[in-house]
Image (cartoon, rainbow over all chains, first blue to last red; front, side):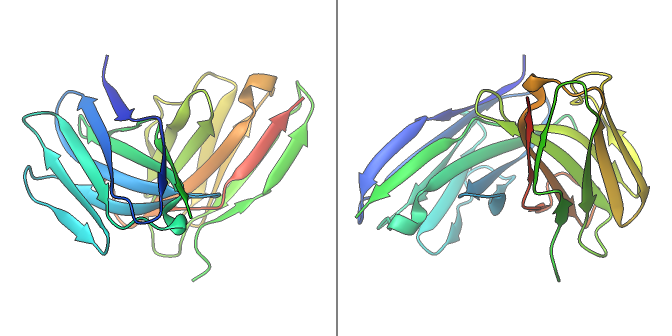
Amino acid sequence: EDKVVQSPLSLVVHEGDTVTLNCSYEVTNFRSLLWYKQEKKAPTFLFMLTSSGIEKKSGRLSSILDKKELSSILNITATQTGDSAIYLCAVVYNFNKFYFGSGTKLNVKP
Amino acid sequence: DAGVIQSPRHEVTEMGQEVTLRCKPISGHNSLFWYRQTMMRGLELLIYFNNNVPIDDSGMPEDRFSAKMPNASFSTLKIQPSEPRDSAVYFCASTTTSLLTETQYFGPGTRLLVL
């Protein structure tokens, strides 16, 4: 069965720490992987990754895809309390299938 | 732009009642997605439309759920009859193309509680 697994399920860090969130997938006909951030309301888009080994970067956040390992990581450096959220990974596969992982809940303490 | 608009924002109903959730996508977007989010199952894609046509409804849990998009600016998700296990947050999202890889803009969600 196709699936997307995120780890860890939850994480507590202090401001200034660096965190790495993982997303692994096992799907047929992989097309792309997307990262979203969900605070109290709706998810907001962060990155879309289609090519292996190419890092996407936005400020303190960066992400990279490893198609060989069927996984992606999301890095957040110098974390701030505003980074506290659920980070969701989603995979597009089989042309029109879209599956979200269960998310990683990040709590950044002051 | 007002973004994706959903109504109602909150809905409390009794088991067996019909529930209708509404969504207005961003003007100019031609793909619309309905999601359901629960603690147990996370975020699930229920159905998506492209140019008002349903493309994939394999995520719709059962026949009690139906979705329509009569025109480019309006969609409904209906549950009839509703059950307590339908309690969840229902999100609508839209995007400019038919590609699932494009950035999807989510609405604020409808929090549904079925008693």
